[in-house]
Image 1 (cartoon, rainbow, N blue to C red):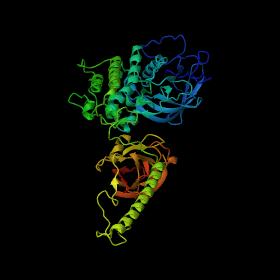
Image 2 (image 1 turned 180 degrees about the vertical axis):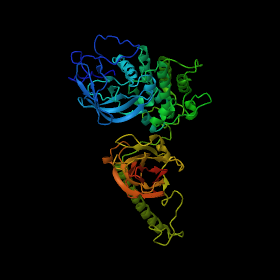
Image 3 (image 1 turned 120 degrees about the vertical axis):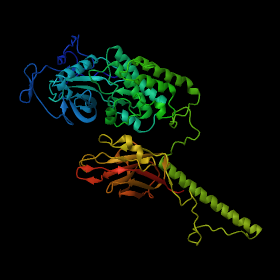
Image 4 (image 1 turned 120 degrees about the horizontal axis):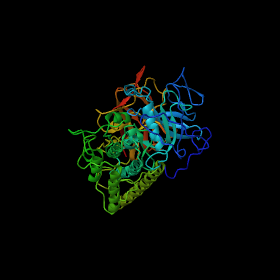
Length: 582
């Protein structure tokens, strides 16, 4: 990407100058002529050699050096003697590609690795090893080696089948910079995104597609797990090696799909890709077209509705009125929407269903003030209590003096103190001191620091007020903490709350939960404070939080799952937090 420094040459690493590592041949693709480059790509070097068929588990590379084959590539496998696979974060079955977070063991940094696998269709296509398909995909990666843009991760290295250190079950791999922040699913799991912010998030991605198509390249924006969102709010192509048959028109539909997802939290293209990414599919009309974003969410501007509809169109249906076929047109349409929003910033915006953010120019009159830190709020309450007691003492003294001056009062006596101890009934009016009210507006997200989050798309069902809907963990073949230390739900409130209790409605008897207060929604587990531990029964379990301090974030941390054997899973139908009576 622009502004990034070139990769440091490391002897034997496969990346460097022409003097450090020559460019070797990639497997031949029938009907394809590989141009002779004047030198190696500036941003990616290819460590490939044409190999003979494996003999007794060993493939012989050009020059007579033997390369030991390794089957069942998975976490911990090192590719090219350099890139250690850490966590698989997605896959594109139509391309035979897996997406991994990996570690560059030489430069000690995270990288993204796209690994190519054999497909069952390869045998039917008279390509039983899949080498022709992989060769074409590797060739495309080579041609994109000099392409850099903020809308896509920079290509660092390319590994071809038969290269030293590449297992026999890997047909090729491409290494890119790691986009460490959020997957597309995680970006929309936290709640609705403002429509104009979603448009700005896709703007750079559309610009990258426009420039790539001008160079004869495709990006692969039509798969949700190839897209990640950076910390500064840019949608970016994070994984390369799209399927061979991909065209620029598929990229255009992908741009419309990414914008559609940011607006509605639904993926409008392949239903199988959506399910694999943990995203629901939208409803469709009789022609198979997805419902427009404004039909699923109020407040979406008609201009963004038009961008999505025009970009998605009807795949393979021929000319469609109002459809756009180029990334340049999508980029121009989104740019016009963003520029118009900048010009109209002096007028109050229409309500789009999302609360105003602290940095927004226009704030709703009902917007609550930013929450005070718990310690400061507690001190303020103590000070107000002392001040109130002092005022009562002064008023009582003045009342006595006034009574002495004007004679004995004939009204009913006022008893100051404990009415119950004096035999008088304690008033219990709704919302009074004896009442506790459920906290509203609770946002919820899956808390997991070790791997894929459990069903993040369903998490809001646990606080939607409907016990018929629910969230559940994955089904684990082993009990916690064999595979991970626990699974959590992080609840966040609009402001700091003093809680009295928590009710958990769940059919998963035997589930053990820890209730923890957290300084922030993304705090580490060690930064949280244990409030209570409870084993859930079947039905509603009430957990007392009477001794807790005011907090804005509460973690429901599951340390033991319900079930047993190879079917360990816990389900939560509803979480209800109750505010202490004031």
